[in-house]
Length: 132
Image (cartoon, rainbow, N blue to C red; front, side, top):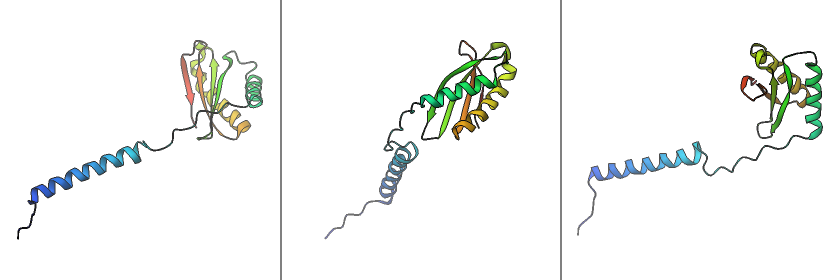
């Protein structure tokens, strides 16, 4: 009668391979979220909200020579966050950060959500951003 017993180094090697596979699987499934469903696309912002944001920001900066307009407005429903692009004169780079913060607070009062504001020149070169 014979019994088959593996040598200790074979057992340790097999356990190391098994641990490496388990760690790799954890990395893929949990950390990188391979099996997680794809995030939903950004939802279009209702037209009346866009109009109200444009009107309120234009009213706020009516006499400011640095303000050129409001660019695209995007809503990210999973994060409950809006993104607003603000068009600013290229010579007003120093004021752009403050304008971003003011616009973020103004739009947050309208939408009751977090608002991320990016300031760009008329040629869409980034000047500043504000993310609460």
